[in-house]
Image 1 (cartoon, rainbow, N blue to C red):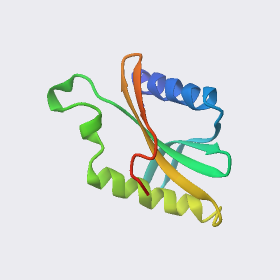
Image 2 (cartoon, rainbow, N blue to C red):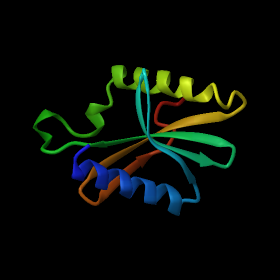
Image 3 (spheres, rainbow, N blue to C red):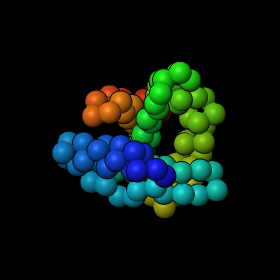
Amino acid sequence: MNAEGARAEDLCARLLRNAGLQIVERNWRCRMGEIDLIAADGATLVFAEVRMRSPTRFGGAGESVTSAKRRRLIAAARLYLYRYPEASCRFDVFLVDGDNVQWIRDAFGE
């Protein structure tokens, strides 16, 4: 990960903590891919994807969350959830543009 990406993830982790969530994992990897941030929101596990894209000639950060990316995130989360079969979960997406962050809670409606 480059320095800009690490800074974006740090910023989003700080936003999660400031909102009262506890960071459980960062950059959790498995054979299905990587989950940027995993946080606990009470009894709910939050799988957070941090997207930053610049320049925008290939589309913004929001366009980079494709259906294929979504499938990989869900598959990775399923593997993670084998540890916690009773846990509820949601998927949040952070779209980062400099210091501006759009936090989309329950982005996949799953």
